[in-house]
Length: 449
View 1 (spheres, helix red, strand yellow):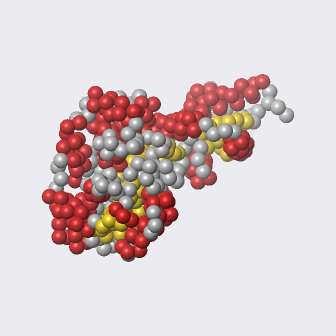
View 2 (cartoon, rainbow, N blue to C red; view 1 turned 60 degrees about the vertical axis):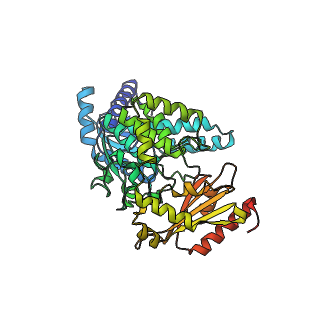
View 3 (cartoon, one colour; view 1 turned 135 degrees about the vertical axis):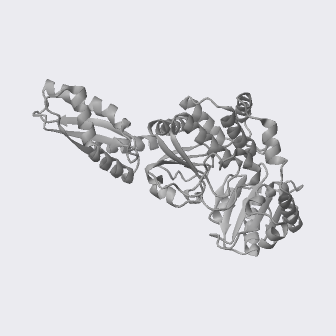
């Protein structure tokens, strides 16, 4: 039997109030909820509320449990706003009809020509809505962080704080951060090296991470109330519930600038400088092939907003600690030409780090000196890791424009990255690593191994 006109109005009113009330609940377990249908009994004793929940089965279960725990609050609001003589008991039910509709939409989409612009727009909307709807966040990036990772980390933290959000920055592990980025004052701004005790109640935002495994603090992804992934690596695994992955972006910093524009966050000088650091380092001082007109225009806007170009240049490129110079000298000394000079491979052992009195992060950027070798199409720097590290060695790969796809080589070792810049970790010996790199180069049309 269809509901009477009066009950249709009651159902509509209950749906409207709940649709407005649920986003205001502070329980971090609650994801994106849409109230699809309400059916209230004629005696107003009971209301069955069908909802759809954005995300996977785990997120759905967490959300429904949280809504069940909030029925008292929601019923009280219904009573206040609707003035009903009796406030119905609420029962939340997952609407599988919506799920079926989504599946049908996906099937239709698979048959239709892909529209990448629509996909990116939808992904952007999902990220922006997530940042708007939630109040507590933990922001992180990948192991061995570079300028894009650290600049993006600080920029998002500052943006969230400006919006009145509770933001915690976390980079797992105890390895020192690269000294050239000390001017960002991350630790003074609250950067922690371990997850906060309430990480499971926060939304996790992973920046510049192609895979979840690159997040050093292992508890973050598993415990997060909701996960967001913002990145520009073409081999990103889209590991989060909400993903914004745009390969064409010069950097994660560039993507964040777009997100901030959607959120209405105007860049302060310190936020602009963090984004500028992300972009200038990931584009190789605007010299790599990922330097686009958009990246250059954005850099100009950030300078206008207060980013200090001279300061960033001096801090990142002209404040090299002497031990790093000595480590660079050792990498150059160990460099070997292969395949007629088309491949350059070098190694840094623990003895090299000790002799140079260099910390682990001092190897950052050394490979860019090797790639300057005339005629080199593929460059590899392999460094031995400290005792107790998850792997024995870590490799960095670079190729020149129109060269081999080094991300494919990195993936063969279990790593990944960009087509022109990638990395991996391995327990293999140096000779076997070198042989596999040479063979992959030859298989890609680079010559005989």
